[in-house]
Image 1 (cartoon, helix red, strand yellow):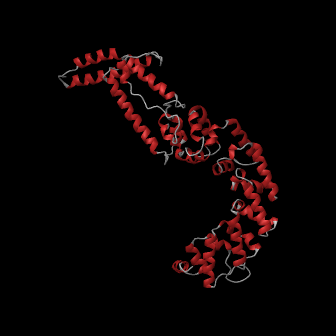
Image 2 (tube, helix red, strand yellow):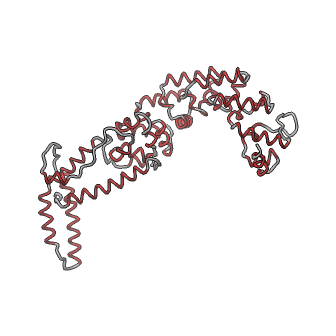
Image 3 (cartoon, rainbow, N blue to C red):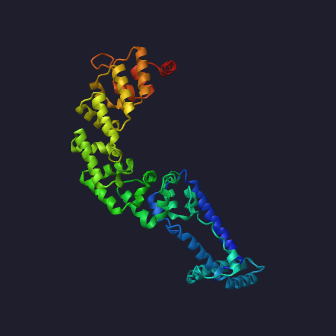
Length: 415
């Protein structure tokens, strides 16, 4: 059973409406992705090929199948219309409805049995004008919105929470994603990430930062995870490191091994402390070593810390290894030279290097104004650096300054 010539435009019109709604929903998510769990995503039916260039041929072929068998359908439609005119009772109306439903089922069954038609087959001029052609794909574009409605890969990445508006700004990202097939290339990578502990709500942000992992060889990824496990990193540790440093698994084993060896040798740490260091700050394994080497020299030569003091501070606050050189020197100059705090106290509270210098200046000035700026642990009313920089303003005023928050805010206006 085939569709009549009158039914074909209606069928195409309804299909276009459904496609438009779907595409509009997906495009609205580009800037603000809606997240879908991996289990739900893999359960979705495969509506189109991962390679979006296949879509045009499939659409044309489907249209040809509908058009090639319109004549018999027209005759059937006229017969049904004649038989069902002016039903005399409710039973006749019900019989007409059942017959129409049965006719639709037979139509779908017969469509599935139609042999494939070559895309090169000539069609009549009447059939040609009934085909609603999709606009051609642009040969080049600055946005992925032109391709998302025809690419299953892009559609499912949006459902995972991937921010395509960020990816399309990165050179080569769009081309790579459009070449990948979701089922054959991407699905196995997603299952692998899920297996090592990356949660569904973390996949979107992870792939937005490191989309290149989708093109990685799965065996190489497994080898890198096996290396980390051989170094006594637990599954929880590996999951935490991968989420916090998305590029971690994109580096080969020899680079990971060299990085671990560098920090163990440079800082003089044992195996356990080296492991704890990179777990807390895994980007040490993926970032540049130049800031780390420069900061080590700053601590030793400019700030005057000993090697064991640097070792202690780094194991407490790993982030100070990658802090700005300017921030380190300015913070130390104020704390050591203005507040008169010696090295051994700074070593006990290295979080001072991780705090905003403006906050330190404001609170020290307020304590000086109140006559409570006393940082010597051997004297009464001692105030530790930890309380000075780590607690909120309300707690600082109540417990440290012994003043009201309003007094502190009024004082800041005078600075």
